[in-house]
Image 1 (cartoon, rainbow, N blue to C red):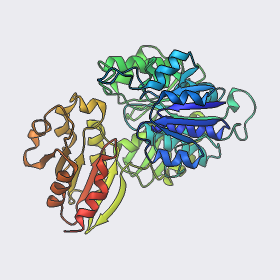
Image 2: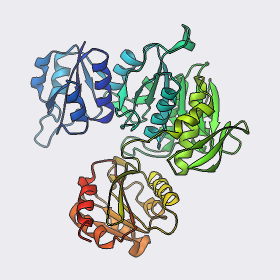
Image 3: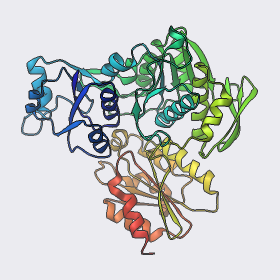
Image 4: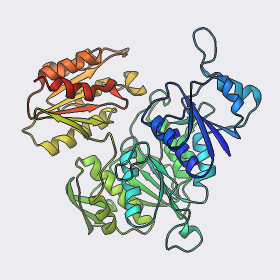
Length: 469
């Protein structure tokens, strides 16, 4: 079929486009400010991209319009629709669906889906799990909200049949998907992951987030329980045993096998430092993970991936061998360069808990003697609302200095960071921020830039500015 994707440059919709193209469909799409890296990847696949959401795109006459959740029924100040193409689709009665629903019906149907849900670590854990299955010879398909370095692409269909398996449920081909709790589309306010119907579901962690669409933690827990309801009796729910919120989710009802990880009494636990640790299954050592990643959060991500891979027949020892060669995901503690003995990193962290665990991971890597300069912007919808501003000093505890880009915020970042005293500085524009960091930097420092966006190209600007030291 010919599908036309509205909002094609987002990581999820762009991955969906790549899968549809690989499956033989004709794919076109549009977005506002068609932007790289997704635009470059899509054009390389022969996918036509159109700038904007003009109603003239109805002339393409696709078999199906696939709607991203960036699209809404909003109007501009002059009263005209913000997305005229969507209005034209509705007026014409043309066929349309959401991205998650199209994916479920045309890619996931009939496959053993392994879904990775959680407030933090979805992209990394999804990538770990896909790499484990790949190294085990299972040729999984996957869709990740980032680019796993081991694969170099964010999505692929994988084998249509499961290698060395017989027919039936046990022989289903495998598909690993990052399962997001954000809503599906303007016309479907359920979480995206409700569409995926996994046989293996990872519940990695659960905190309050997405304050723009959820009123409180209980509302998100309800969506997670909707996901649990879709897992069959023969399925497995892999759950973080350290999270009270997830305990509440399972207490609301669970009809599948449960395997826990993280806590000492969990089915899967770890002994040792995050960069080298023994894996215990039911208290017995079954593997040792010796890899290039650090941080307690990644240790927990690994346990979750091991427990999920075990459900499809990959022994923990084989999975641990795969993790030894795991290279993480772009924008996850990615070194962007070093100048005059100063290293600049890029990381996707934006929620206070993610910021804290990311700084902690770098601290474990560098030791107490080195300085960490944390450079961040509260860019996510939740952080822009100021819902979690009081947690910022806590999240930056382990950083020596902190620099906040406060441009576009409706709340006072200086007041929020006041408890940090002289350790924190705030700038209203990128150039001022770069100047502040450059003035404070010394040889041997580690500059950790954290944002879920492009951060105004701050990494390259810092590397250029640091050359003047």
